Length: 249
Figure 1 (tube, rainbow, N blue to C red):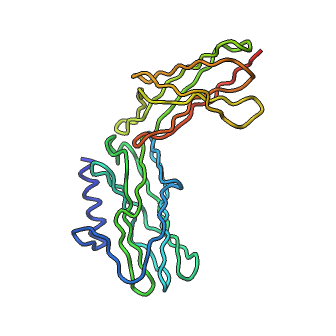
Figure 2: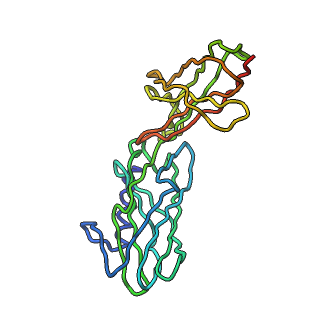
Figure 3: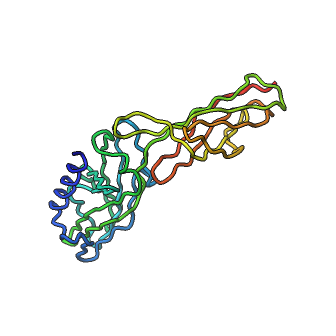
């Protein structure tokens, strides 16, 4: 039912914009969209609770930008649809404006797990002289299921030169019920940060078990912290565990 409602909502939004049935780009005059950014880095990680993220569109016209249409529309795999609130446009100079809008998403109401992946942005911009542009697929970005990692280093304390074992578990959110479940067979990095420094160093890369459990060994050298870090993939977001400090004697 949610997917059906999403499709209807998207259709209504497009109807309001009077977009031709073919949904091709529509350009009148010299209006151009020069940049689109979603959530700062074009990668949105959604966990178990509702969140908002910003979509920013930069556009130009020789007469200046008047406004954006009622919403910026986002489309994803398996009929995923998200609709922004009314964009607000701010002039950068006489010809260029930045139009921003917020998208609210409640995963349990708006998303199925198979909606994760590559999404696109559709936007309509109006210029002051009557020119306009409707841009379909103005940007591709990732909408990802949030992941979590834990890490525990032992023994504590440990003598220099002895083996340290770091264990943990990786989980990923299920958007449909808001719970996190084991996420297996992923490659994660064991990282180390020496006491008194701020830089994490990669120690080794390991692959989790099919049920998401992690175990890595390393040699104790100096006091410091260990953690696991995950880079993410097309449908699952990056994350790092909390750091676990080891006293080396």
